Structure formats: C-alpha cells, structure tokens
Length: 319
Image 1 (cartoon, one colour):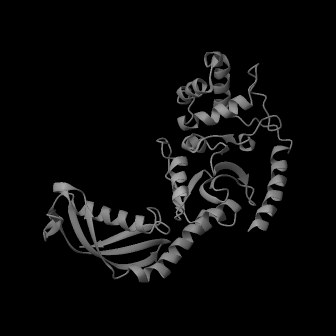
Image 2 (cartoon, one colour):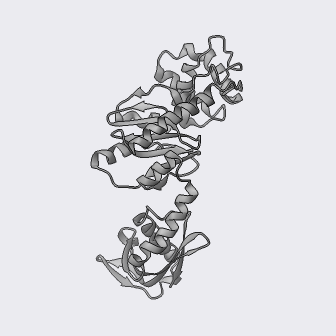
Image 3 (tube, helix red, strand yellow):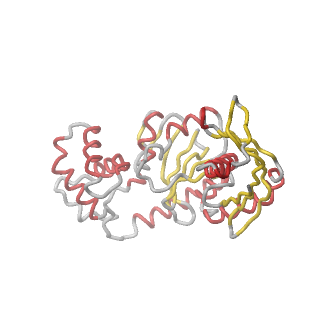
C-alpha cells in the first residue's frame, strides 16, 4: 500500500501541473463570488480581526446566494487572493491561489469542524484534512486520523463517513471534526462506507455505483443466512406511549438493484410494567402500524449500516 501511495504522489504532481499551469485563463471565481469579494474590499476596514471578518462574510452569504456554512472557506480564499484595487474580474487560473493547495492551518481538534465543513486544509492533534487528486483526475478532500485512517471524504460533491469501528480516541476525533453536524443547509446526508470503500473512492479504484452494487450482492448472499428466520423483539417510544413488537425477517432478496427485506409481524401491543400487552386489533389503532414499521426499518438499517441505507433497501410487511 505504501508503494501505491508514493506512485499516487508522483501522479498527483503531474495532474496538478496540468490543471494549474495549463494556460487556461478562465476566472476561477463565479460572478457571485466576485461581487462578494468586492463588497468585502469596501467594508473590510470595519473588520479588525479574523473573527469579525468571518462574521461579516457569514452575514452576507445569503445576500449573495452562497451557503452560510462556507463562510470560513471564503475568508481563506478572499485573504489569499486579496486585490487592493478590487480587480477580481481579471483573476485567472495562473494567478489564482487555489484553496486546495493552501498550507494546512493549525487548529485544536475541538475547532477542526469549522475547517472541515469549509473543506479547508487543517492540521490538529493526530487529525488533519487536506485536498488531493486521484488517478481519475478527481479532486477529493479527506480527513484522516493518526495520519493514515480516512474517516471523512468529500468527492464528487458528496460526503462519505467511514463506518468501521476505530479506537475511542479516533471515535472522539470523528465527533469533533464532523463536517456536517451543524450544516442545516446541507442538501444530503453523509454516506457511510467501509474503510476499504472510502480508500477505493480516494484512489479512484471504485465508484459509488460499484460500492452500492457490491453492498446489495454481499448482503443478499452473505448476510441473508444470518438474519432470515431470526426472531426479534423491539421496544418503541417511552412512557405511556411505549410499544413493543415481535417480528421475524422472513426473506431477503435482490429486486431491481435494491435489497428487499420481508418482515412478518408476530405480535404487537402497548407496554405495561415493561411487558407487552398484546393487542390483536393494533392495525386499527391510528398511527400504530406506521410507527411500528418505521421503527423496524430504522433498527434493521442502523444494525447493518455497512450494507443498508434508505436508498438501497425496501421493506415489505406482513401483518
């Protein structure tokens, strides 16, 4: 694997040279970004510190139609490419300081999420984020723990999170650096993948489609025998509204490129003194069936997150 990394570094240098020194003169900033930077030029004298300037940018993001979570990102790009005369229209790829090549900013781990959510290079304590290029000429932003374990990856406009269980220290780092925990305007959730999958995406070995197809095949062939026929008992809710349901996973199969899971409900009812009081008429209780089915779905998906997601699985219930 180390030999592979060294080869990748040589390839990356070649790709960077082609991308950044290719003689293309297109402005790397959009019209909205140019307007934002011109506005900052006019008002930057009011911001005496980094924090005040970042807050100013954050307030203006909605005005310029840009995501508020990227305020720190625009601070870094703006300060690196500051033009006293405000001539941002004539920036080119040749004179633009590409944020992906910025030197890593040092930060304590409990502040790392600010850099991670902005996808800016940073270095914490055994935790770092940086940009690279894979063999498919795709840029990616990866966050690693202890210099080696990839825990978050941003590639092809999607965030990925490793699903493998690491040490307590790495788990803590994952919580600290979580790049999407406070991104209310993020349009999609992070996709959980295995360590091998996340490395495959980094190096350009796998595509997301190939990973999803493998999940379907592996779950319906290897995991099926472990789950089909198993009887489960699930408690839903709390207090006076708590419910219990007993069910069996009757069948698992591939259907239309997805994992179809058939669930047979054995019995269900309310919880009294921590015990199920079976209600044979539960299907006529408003909202009861929906809550039970959704609860079972969540339980099965979360228990098998290396394979299952809302997108690749469907459920059929037999009552």
